[in-house]
Length: 77
Image (cartoon, rainbow, N blue to C red; front, top):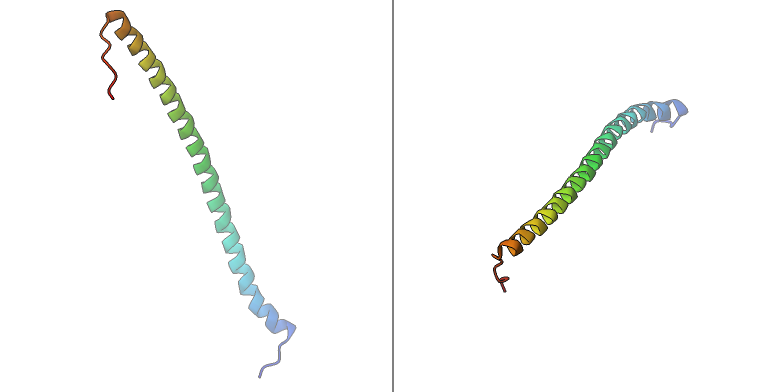
């Protein structure tokens, strides 16, 4: 059996260090993409909230117009 020396251990660990560096680099890229997606999702949430607010105001306006014109239908049950 071969004797385990520091040189042998170093030769085994050297490629592992390179692979670990590659993994860290890829994780940095994934982290950046995830941050970007989070920012975009937050923007979508704000946009949807704004749409709901606009629809709410439009619904109030239509209801007010219907009351003025006396064309309000009975609510569906």
